[in-house]
Length: 111
Image (cartoon, rainbow, N blue to C red; front, side, top):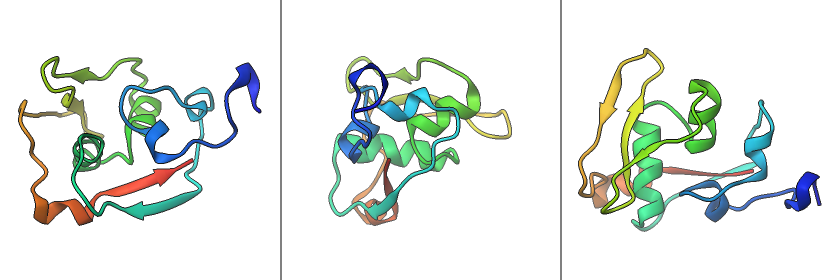
């Protein structure tokens, strides 16, 4: 167990979405493993949006941009707006944007 009773490792389900992960506490976290998405889900949709903006996932986005909250659509929970590395913004729709033919391109990182 790490500080504050959090586990040392977090699986993909703890890395994505609105859940907190032990990786958030460290400023320079590197993923331990990577896998590809096989099937679409809400978590894959959000990962697709982060990766389209140039980040691995929500953890890296928060580290780089120094934000504490990511804008989500209240109706669907999908990411609403992300700042790219060149300081421009991506604005996303409420509906699904990751087509089935794009799902296999999404990377799932485990910490």
